[in-house]
Image (cartoon, rainbow, N blue to C red; front, top):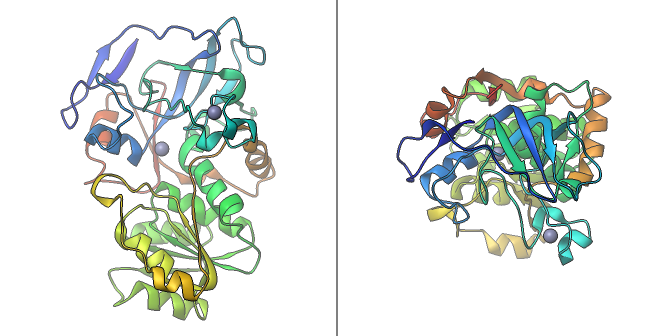
Length: 346
Ligand SMILES: [Zn+2]
Ligand SMILES: [Zn+2]
């Protein structure tokens, strides 16, 4: 099969003919129909992810059709339309047994722990635990955005953040995760203030339901700007970028007893950011991480999409070919683009 393949970090990936994946006994091989290009893929290619063993095929935001299943698989068959969370659970550890596959002790992550979906086929382990059936109404390009950024935002806003009607929710960073969070928080009845340094992204945030926006380059203090917009600080705030500055601002912009959710990955030199811990104590702030979403929780999100309350297709920026994905991947830090970039029909 054709795949985007690299054998050294930070060296140009190549489009190569590689062997088709074998079908795991408990897993499935999925014919990839669409797969998103994500900042996590860029982090992986940069060498920031210790799970990646070279040579490697990136890609973790996939949707496609089951091509083959292993002998132990009960719930899936060839031809099923599926997607998969970017963190797949083992199904047997303490966390998986309590429904928390997103923090499984023995995770399978396509595109990180194993070869991913910048390819014609991808093998998914423990298919009965991790595959998610796609309703016919959701096209593959839209579905490709669900497995990582949209689902991650859904869990961050709804489950970890507990966004409620009438609350102010601040979203720091309007990339794929941030824009998803804007749409989801607005759908939950919250008022969203979106923060970014790019006017085009802020305009899209408004179109997706943000009640207010803050251009971080145009104000002396993001924290003060949010305090003004929200009348004293956000009830819930998300760092959707994963940077020491946005992390700090997200915590500092909360009102008393507010909740911060860290969604953006903090890797490499950013792994131990400064935190206004004095304020965390005196204002009884709550800090939580959010890491993907288990397959069994997709039903709630898919139901909101089916009902028209969420529209992830509006997050898709441009569609590209597998060959174009190399430039999209390696140039991600320089030309991040607006919305989610999706590779179609690799
Ligand atoms: Zn991703
Ligand atoms: Zn597990």
